[in-house]
Length: 362
Image (cartoon, rainbow, N blue to C red):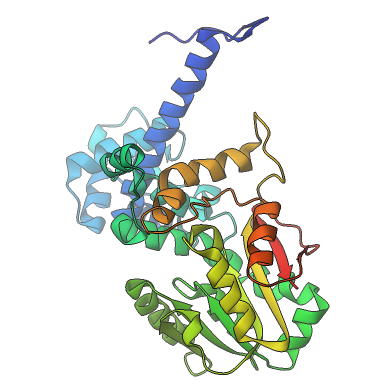
């Protein structure tokens, strides 16, 4: 395929210009697939520790040498790896993972750890036949059907924020939430997933106790393991249950990046109101999409619609009945849900994050 210089006419971009854009996306998709292999097979982790030849990488990761060599060469020509001597014999070439690239690909606590998003894209791609069927029938593809890749990638993508800035900077910047955290209040984390948000709160604020609620069994099992490994299991408990089963009242009730996935968000928000103490705080954190639809959109808007058409909307529509929110839950949509759930209004909190918006429900 020959890619020509992009030009535009009075009616918009030319075929050549859009063809070039799609071709660039093709190269990006191949890079995502290679990154998925590198993650699943432990190739990046091995290269983060040492510069390796194909036989050495194969031996350390339990992979076939011929595949290891082809993958290494692809990563080098794609600019992910460097090679000491490109003229050496194929089996003697030594490949290196630059430190900055290693952070993105292997440092699970770095805010720059983007690799889980690549795993999510590749993992969801395994279910395209099911998605085609859902688009035709109006049904869905559930979180359970998306399986391990989706669960683990989602949790890994949010882990740096949930263990870092969220509990240590963002939430303490809100006076009414800081007061709860400082006095060791009781917190309910609705839709807790792998538990990193609850664990992050407990690690940053040693007097709080947290109950995490989620209906997904594998996620709750992972959350319990994570709490044990983090040393906070005595103060963080996870329940495979709807939050409506909660006992007592909570000083802070949270829902981090999950309300838009729920088939019946009004009922969930009503439950959050019911389990909050009379002076408790109800906090919803969801995607920072534009407040109104416009096209074309910025990169964040494109990203969120991309998740919506392949994952979040199909998951929401896998249940009946469903409001079918999708990832792009704009403030006015949440405001409507909140009022239907019995709240007076929502307040957008002054927390600046590229991907998330913070709402207090009053």
